[in-house]
Image (cartoon, rainbow, N blue to C red; front, top):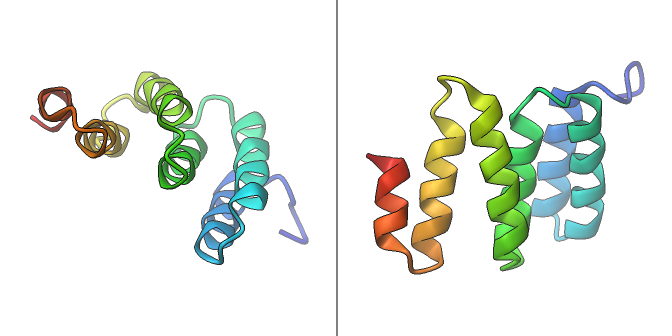
Length: 100
């Protein structure tokens, strides 16, 4: 990050590390920067959705995952994350729609 502070994969990794260290506000800021730096990349939004989900901010997590799915093309990870989010919220049918 010292060489390229806006390099999305590194910022995503830093954001996830901050979340695991119990610093979700800092994680969300980092992941927001990554999403702005890479508007066509689903990974920052998928990661940010995980932080929102950990905070039980379901609507924000779902919005990020909807956008991540739109951007993902044939990458399965945002679909899987959206299915897991739906299941965590108690919407098993909705979860299965993305996991099938």
